Image (cartoon, rainbow, N blue to C red; front, side, top):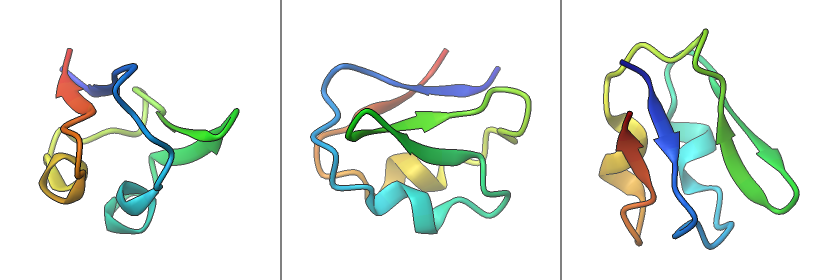
Length: 56
């Protein structure tokens, strides 16, 4: 199951550069994960200061 970004996202976008498959992009000032590309590695969750990426 892919990760998704919760409303806790503060828009720092630290997760964007951490994603090994480029599944994360910026949308409306916050991060957004493409569930079709996400490989559920959790790299985004490891760098997020507010724990916004969560497994669906």
